[in-house]
Image 1 (tube, one colour):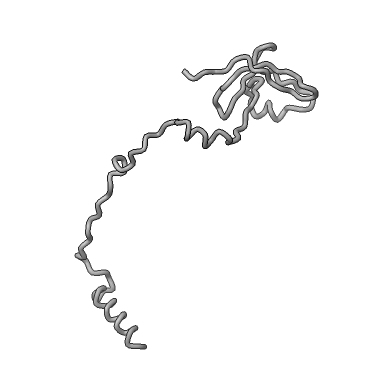
Image 2 (tube, helix red, strand yellow):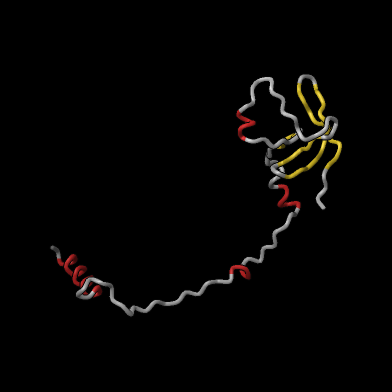
Length: 126
């Protein structure tokens, strides 16, 4: 054992006492925490500068024809040719949804060989 190792072992033994436990009564200095609410003088809000940062973010939009609630056993019983009766009348506008938020209503149109939606009402936040 070298002299450096012996010094470390002696110092450790002295601080732990004879029982191997750490010495009690060591002083701990309290720390002072900043008031983060006062330090952060940031007011969240939509400004044209902030809004521009997210304008090109792509979000999925869903065209929802209707909703129906079925039991698991009803879903398991579905086979090709089964008809699922939706809770919406024919001719009613469909919902355009982003996430769970209704943003507009429209009607189904066919453009060439694809379906589309013609907007008939934009939902405004109240």
